[in-house]
Amino acid sequence: MTAFQGLMVLPVSRQRLCAQSTEQQAVSLPPRSPVWALIIALMHEFESLEELFYQLKASGKAIRKVAQVLVMIYDNARGPKARKA
Image 1 (cartoon, rainbow, N blue to C red):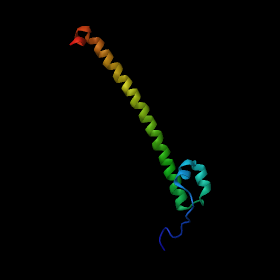
Image 2 (cartoon, helix red, strand yellow; image 1 turned 120 degrees about the horizontal axis):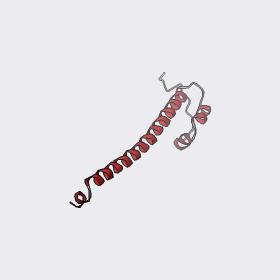
Image 3 (cartoon, rainbow, N blue to C red; image 1 turned 45 degrees about the vertical axis):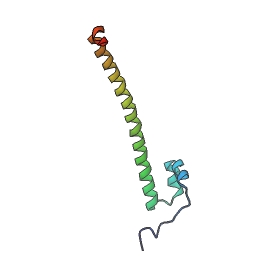
Image 4 (spheres, rainbow, N blue to C red; image 1 turned 90 degrees about the horizontal axis):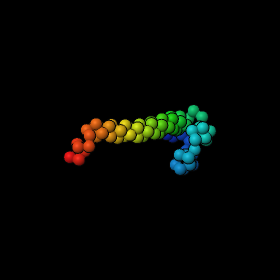
């Protein structure tokens, strides 16, 4: 008997599965089944990665703004003659 022979296959489409919240997925699968545990773990990892992505995106915007201000300060410090060259 292979590891997958004892698993129950549920008729759940990928779209429906992605649209469900973690709690809804936990209710729709048999508790403590390997598939249930895997989906819950993957959803938590996905949520963590998604949060990290948004934090990095916000950090990137902040870094760009700081760089623009530093360039402006540098240009102003050089004076008008240096800007014309």
